[in-house]
Length: 211
Image (cartoon, rainbow, N blue to C red):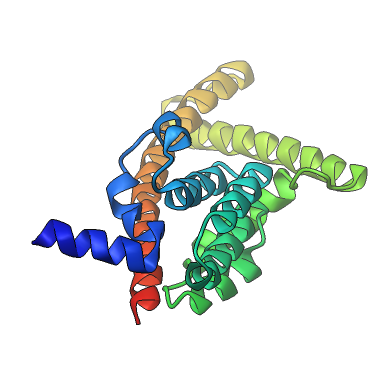
């Protein structure tokens, strides 16, 4: 009986109802999906946005909308706007798109990181000046990290008579590498929470389709 209800729901609301069942599949399996092609392409588009690949995300969502039922397309368009805003590092538009989807927008810290990423790594097609600015910002960040690591090592080593410049720089790099590793671990956990939020977003879109 439950399976019959699921089949009826998919017939009525289209393949987007199959998104939760397809989430665990690999990209290769989703590309080979034919029965629920629109749902598979929507998932691929969201994954491409997480990799900041705006071109691939747009292509997948366009393919999803081409194969979706008319009543599914408004929700898909909103999902596409949110995904492209993330992929193209547009924090303000991402916040607006998430609010229109009825989802809690990213935190101020997450939006700040997205804005910083947009400065360091501009989207494809940006002007030469923006790319040069990104490289300069990246070099400045590297120098700041080295200086911060050197400062920490020097501060810690003061009670022991201090440390040489070269040794301080090398130890500072080790300290900052460890710190960045911890931050990377924290970032991965946050990414998992973001993935859970994206799944909730898709579920909300499906519920709106059922109304």
